[in-house]
Length: 168
Figure (cartoon, rainbow, N blue to C red):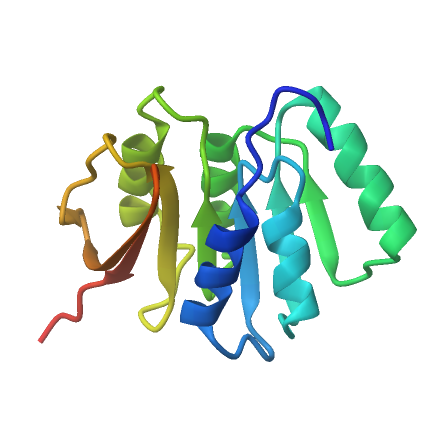
């Protein structure tokens, strides 16, 4: 684990995957991957493919080492900033069933990245976005086509679940 990162706590990670349920065959994107613990957990729970996006050099080195040692063929690592990765995935018509993001706290990144995910099409109508954020970092109920449908608190940490609004 690289120094200076805040990994998702075990209790939060367990709660997340209890909520997500069966991941058999889904494509999973983890933005701000850090240690990759959430993405690796998705693989262990049946995700068909996991994409990790991380820009921090120390985290990238740890992720490469972990992917190699665990022999994770269904895991792809992109050494990009989250915003650039989202644009790239949109341009390449990459679609992810579940997008998880856990940006650094206190920098306003959650809202910024959510806005991008509401504009750039990388999540299908049946997919959703999960944001892990600090409890005082309030996120709006609606951002573009994304609407909040669930919020779960675990101490200072909140998981906010968004999905695309269905147009009638």
